[in-house]
Length: 113
Image 1: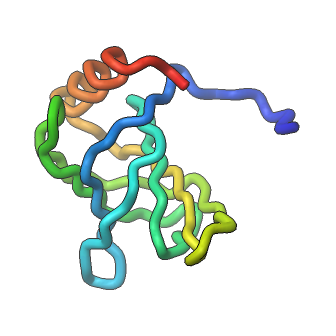
Image 2: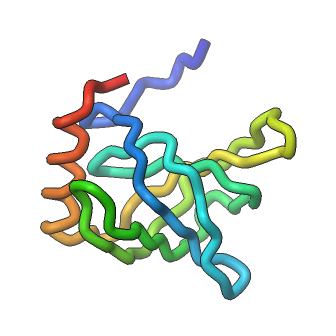
């Protein structure tokens, strides 16, 4: 059981939006796991280093405009999948007001998990 206090200020929601992370000089597609107004959790084939900064590109989808922003990797866990994948939690750095409004709208229209 995780005994750390949950510091999340808003509920997370599973949202199906197209997300790409810029690593190794290319955009790598990710699967969105969780979304909140503070951070996003994605699943991808590559492991990312906690504390590093990466560019995140969210493509326009239902209820969400296209956004590109800088994020900080908070955590990266290896998942026991076949093939092996990694789940990374990324905190937004200076998100725009439009982005925060879109995220809030999306997460409020979905039931928290």
